[in-house]
Length: 264
DNA sequence: CCCTATGTTCCCAA
DNA sequence: CTTGGGAACATAGG
Image (cartoon, rainbow, N blue to C red):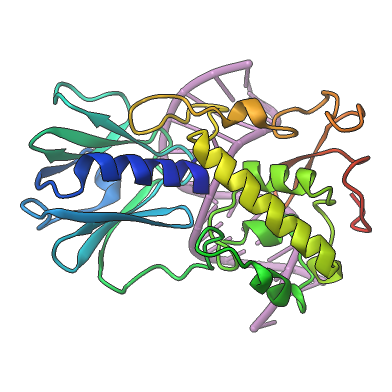
């Protein structure tokens, strides 16, 4: 479920609530997550995000790294009553608790030593210069959509935002990345930063069951131009928005506005 | 029963 | 080695 804007939303909200607080207890409800030991008594020193991964950093040299996959989310509760359905993990503090809720049980939690990160591509919000994308693409023949969603190249873009970025950049999702001009890369980079930052300002996209840390829906679903709009009229040209599979993922686009020699 | 789902990983083929 | 396709993971909803 969560892509970069949704994870960034959780990151910012967790900072308001648990940084500086001591973890009193951790409770694994789904054994599939594995054991988490020696965390109780630690103080949260910071919250960081890279791509779609969220790290709760501890005052020692360790961090709890969460990956939400398809349906994982976090919920902050002041009171510690019963568990909501699909709760897989609870991290308790004196003043409240954070629950990992995940119907499909694909989410992962791992304890990392400092400096032992998961190898990922650069995060598109780390700096303003995305020229590395064009360089990486020179000897690559992947379709642009697969390229943008490859977490080892750029970390954080998933299916919703890939569709939206390519639509606003007027780019055919099947276009091979080694055929893009410098101007086209410039357009992609600008649109990517614009869409991701606006989606963060909207606290993410609640097209299905995404909620922020406090249970509220995001608002970016009101700004989607193609995702989930199969059969509807393109806002740009009035033609029909199409959905086709690309690498197994539903790909929404306007064939009229998004041209190229990709053969969509 | 069918299909779909905001993600990642693994296996296999070309 | 690269890439692409499909299945798998587990569950809910249309």
